[in-house]
Image 1 (cartoon, rainbow, N blue to C red):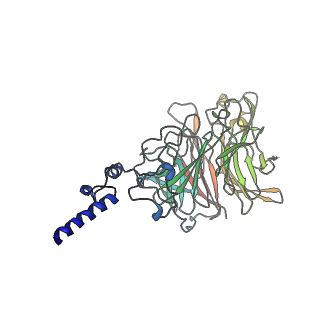
Image 2: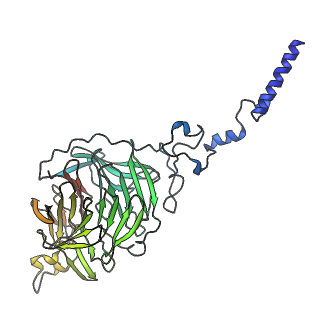
Length: 485
């Protein structure tokens, strides 16, 4: 009797436990059909808005069967208003890594150019610049050059940053995956094209910012152990769209102290760019900062963030179609008052497509290279100049420059010094056999970029300049160190 009573009590207790778990005795201890289907699909009960922030602790991260780790809010939907492409099947996005110790500077003698030798898969490499310009980024702590975003990705399932990881004066060119919220392949940077992008790198953090001449978005890439983690900010209203959409070859300058990018100077369909645009990289706001300026093209710009001013040097001014003049002057913009001052009679004369950078610690402005159009060649002067002087394709009468100048700003005056003399820029060759038009085939031992603008960055940690550029048709890009201590 006692044995039967004990069995009855045990059975009653089993029924009560099953009821408390919401199941039945036959399925006690087994997952429910709802739980099984959720686990098979790899889905979470959490809606997208319920996801914890990225810095949540593991204890707050939710149940182990929540959303797969390789899906982030940025991967869940396209950020360009269209198809974002196949989902990222790579590892989960990592957190940005801390800055490593600053390495020693490269062994370059003061006042000398030193070419960086790039290697790609064991062969001589090259820089894959955006086609429309030679802008690049430099991370001095990790010795990484950022060249372009998603220009020639091998695996379009994962957008990539084309980079060169340096070791002294040599660098391995590779593609670093960009995960998280990133711009998809085929992003319209301008003219429904992806090649007119502006990459810029914060020298203090190594962060990369990428936008375009009429792209109403700003993407920030932060370095991780295996690639980059991206975030994308949408611009609420982009006043450039419809006004300068067809303009190409923009001049830009970065103010890393205040996180601004300035955009002024481009080749337009009838007249050159006459508005300076300012892009706030933190708020993703774009405004026409200064209007009714001289129409400019192939000017170079640099920002003095300490004194809140911007320099625009040389370039071609145009007011009407077929009316232009290459300048031997510099415009200095006060970014607080939006007023400008013109300084004429620059010691290097009239030039287009120079590279320039500013050293805020020592108040030094650096200007390098460029070219002087054939119209200013003495051989093209007079009543009957050679017929090829009027040919806009041939470079036979163009004067190319690779000298380096420095302006020290003292008490409001500019003291110019030539740091590196002019050397032979290369030789003129036809692109194809039988062509009458000649183009510069550059001497790559020093920076020679033909009629293509180069870019120059001042590296405050080492008191160096880094210069990058390309010669179209002959060269896809080269970098150089310059010691300016």
